[in-house]
Length: 230
Ligand code: CA
Image 1 (tube, rainbow, N blue to C red):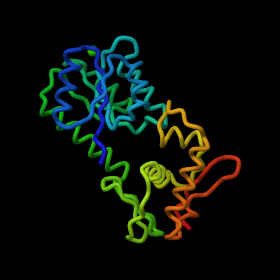
Image 2: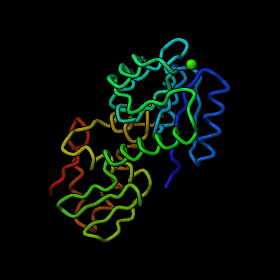
Image 3: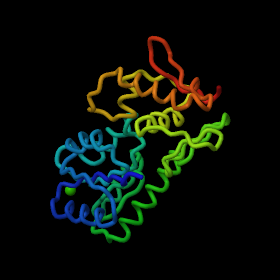
């Protein structure tokens, strides 16, 4: 499975460097930002699995950045751990209300930080559903990166896998090609909309031998919908 990516947003260079070294040492892939504006760009480019966010930032604060993330369907589910200085009790409450998953008080111990990251990632993984199985017999396992139809493995490419995972976790809703590009390919990835059609075709073809191709439905003039029943 791909490495877990963490976006570190912290303006104090020594603290950010320490965080990055600690996280990389623990096996995470790290992207760094010294301010929220850069972090906005990276949230889209990197699609992190977790954001470690300092509260006090120049310009847009950690709290404002959290609210910005939570307003957007593409970022809403990204787990956030807020870093606060001792004595900022009030900010903790505000942060939790804004949707922060957990917080760590500075100065922090490496062990505590890593334990909290692990716990938040575990919860987020459980929320998203590591395994999604439909009554019809189609199943996708995020942890094992595997698709099965009535227990038989279905070979799919990486993009088709992400597309199918998105569909299976968001069934019975119509998505336009541009929404699918945002959700599956990520924002700021400039790909032509008909690329979506190519991967939809491949996905249907992969599902066809098992009789599941009609789960992916074309909604004329709008886009695509995934139905969980044949
Ligand atoms: Ca700071």
